[in-house]
Image 1 (cartoon, rainbow, N blue to C red):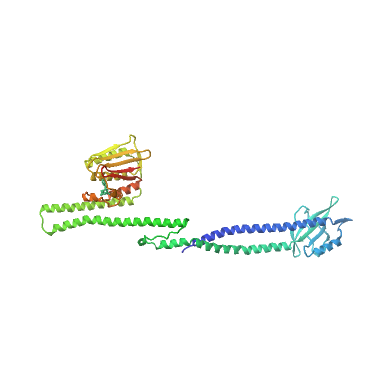
Image 2 (cartoon, helix red, strand yellow; image 1 turned 90 degrees about the horizontal axis):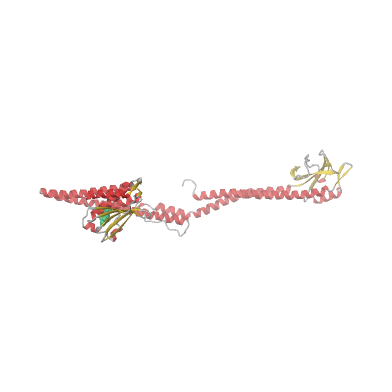
Length: 455
Ligand code: ADP
């Protein structure tokens, strides 16, 4: 199989979409956690700053810590848990005093930063800290700055652990998701693979086989039903095709056998000239029959092959009137034109096809009946119609459903040896279908037959 299988495509697409969603969710988790952690530290820093700002006083222009010893004690006790680093700088940034836990290190002084500003992260030695800078004022005069910092090590370690966990989880989740999707997609398309397997087995010679019907109402159930319906139609059309070919050869063989028989009889011994004329007449009749059948077969093939011929705007009252006159002249029979509408009726149809349809119906009416043939044209509320009515023997109920099949001829007609091929109405039906005309027939043994064309 070339390219990716369908299950792979499904799994790949779903995984890609999930990858994006998970990435966004992880980013949100990381940002929320890091924001909360930093906020907590900053809150604590703020509290510490407030606490220590009250412990500073000025003595002879020198800034000092109040109770520095106690304070050292306090801080000393707390140093392991959460060390607070403090430094006081003057307006030039020179260190005035600092907490002992800073040892040789100094906090960073940022000239001009006021007390309203948020804390920021810096490095002292090899330690990360959050630092805040506060203005120290004495009687409205700026005296210096208090720098307060607290360790950021724990928080930064927590955040880097979280980052690591999320980074490891991300590909893990995606790989397992891809495998699960692959498995589930494979499971859901299993019935389709069965259908493919079965349809691959069905060939022209096994068209009677069907895809097993799956008892489900979903798309896969519908697919199996649609394939089976398609196979039904294919099988029916194959059967019709085979039947047609065998009927056609049979119908052509009959006049050929007659021809051969006649010629064989003729050469057996010398004949009188009358006998020659008579036998040659019979042979000619057979040849005529074959040739008209071949003409009809060609006509049928042409209709089947033809692309839908262009449709014209045809005014059917004058069109049928002309046809009636022509038929009267050609057949010498009473062909009546009966218009049931006083206004012109325009229909959208292929003129050539309509002419062939009506000629065939009129020929049949003339051939199978003795009396008048009526051509009625009219219009109901919605549609135009043409009726070809005869007063002949009618068509039996059994034959009515079959007369449009190729080669079908009513047994009575065969008995009476009325010439014909049984192809005329098959051609009519194909033409009507092609040009979009509905054709129906009503027949009564007493009252004759009526073929109705509806537009
Ligand atoms: P064909 O006329 O060559 O036999 P058609 O296909 O035209 O072939 O007609 C099929 C059959 O339908 C005819 O053999 C005949 O039995 C019947 N049929 C058609 N038209 C009429 C009609 N107007 N009256 C009685 N029977 C008819």
